[in-house]
Image (cartoon, rainbow, N blue to C red):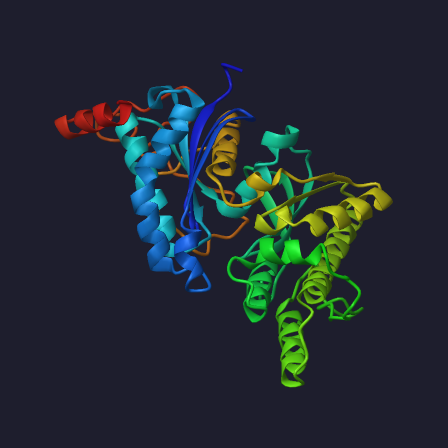
Amino acid sequence: MADEPLVLGIETSCDETGVGVVRGTTLLADAVASSVDEHARFGGVVPEVASRAHLEAMVPTIRRALKDARVSARDLDGIAVTAGPGLAGALLVGVTAAKAYAYALGKPLYGVNHLASHICVDQLEHGSLPEPTMALLVSGGHSSLLLSTDITSDVRPLGATIDDAAGEAFDKVARVLNLGFPGGPVIDRYAREGDPHAIAFPRGLTGPRDPAYDFSFSGLKTAVARWIEAKRAAGEEVPVRDVSASFQEAVVDVLTRKAVRACKDEGVDHLMIGGGVAANSRLRALAQERCDAAGIRLRVPRPKLCTDNGAMVAALGAEMVARNRPASDWDLSADSSLPVTEPHVPGSAHVEADGQPDGPAHGHGHAHSHSHDHVHETAKENLYS
């Protein structure tokens, strides 16, 4: 285990400041500072509020993660950070912090993809990913079916949402039901006491001529809202539990049906489900039922690893180091629309006039040798303390 890469990961794509420490495929620390309560009164994430919260939480959360992992920053083999996709301002805070720490510590920097990280986190729960792996990622911003033959270099999108993501639909329906924000957990709770077959809500893009692997939840969201409005206009009480259960069933029915179909079509016998909505109890149960019937092995991380966290970024970073993938350059920038086909943002090796590399180290255990000025040395002492 001591020979496996030790990596710190930073995640700031939305409203969670996540910092994780991973050695190989072993999770050592997963520290999270959430600003969700600050967004609740607005009914959704406010980018400026999220960015400020990341800025305030960054250093304390990194220190907590290192303390929980019982490692020193000196011992790290690399620092990984979500470079995209996500909220531009929020991503920028994380990328800037990662660059500062990596430069001051003389460690290689890895800008990685948020979606690929959601897949890779399962290694911390169930061991190395099979190749290929089919992944269903469902969150507030993404609903995607992805096929990965190498999580560090080859992730192919098969389908995605054409409008609202599944998590976004949960939030919007919860708002119409006056259940607050975020909507996923509260709808899950109410649905457990409701009838999933009480209301026949539509299943988007499930017709014979519709795209096989794409998703659409905007029409479902609108149908639920109109149904509720009709009840209220008639002066009738809205059966919140039945609405929650029927809406939730419509979402997870489509998600699991298309995911299992993709596995069959591509000849893949493993399905991994990740993202915040993967914490939904009904999604897990129906996915297990349908995978068992189809002879597919289901892999779903525990709920805490499904939501945004630094552990998933560290996991992908550790895989980058282990497979000797090139580190990112110091001019790494945040990319709010970074495509999933780019699991990480590799750099190019630059050489200075003196023949020394002008960028992060590439490879496990070979830290780059900078020319250190006084400011650099002072920064390092502050980080080690």
